[in-house]
Image (cartoon, rainbow, N blue to C red; front, side, top):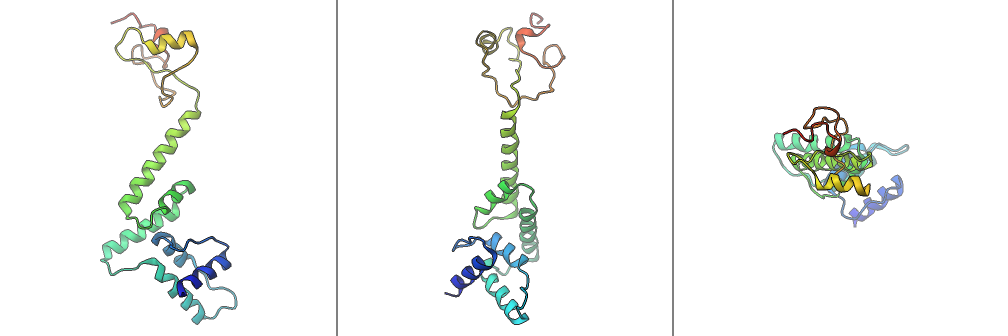
Length: 174
C-alpha cells in the first residue's frame, strides 16, 4: 500500500506516468534527482527518499559491482539519444556490459538506418566482367544495390570515384 501511495505522490507531483513496477535503473534515477520541495521539512524529505529507495533494489554488493552499477546509471542518464535511453530502460535490470552492447547495437542501427535517406550509389560487382544487377539497372532505371555503401569510396578496379561497373574505364581489363 505504501508503494502505491509513493507512486501516486510521484505521479501527482512530477506529472510523470510511472508504471506500478518501476525498473531499477529508472528508480535510482528518480531517487538521485529528487529535490526537497518548498515547505517540505527535512524529516518529510528523508522519508520520501527512503520510500523511493525501496524501488531501487539495493543489495549488498562489492565496491566493484557498486562502481559498475553507478557507471551504468551515469551512462544511461548521459546518453544524447533519447531513443537509445528509452530502449535501455525497457529492461527492468541491466548490467553495464549489456547496457553498452545494446546501446552500441542501437547506435549502429540508427546510423545504418540514416543511410537509407542518402541518394543511392552503386557498388562494383567484384571480379566479374559484367554485373547482372548493374546491367538491369541501366535498362530499368532501378537499383537493387544496398544503399549502405560509402558515398565517397573509390572504384575497386580503376581507383577513381566509385561508379557503376559498366561505366568503369577498366571494365575490360583483367
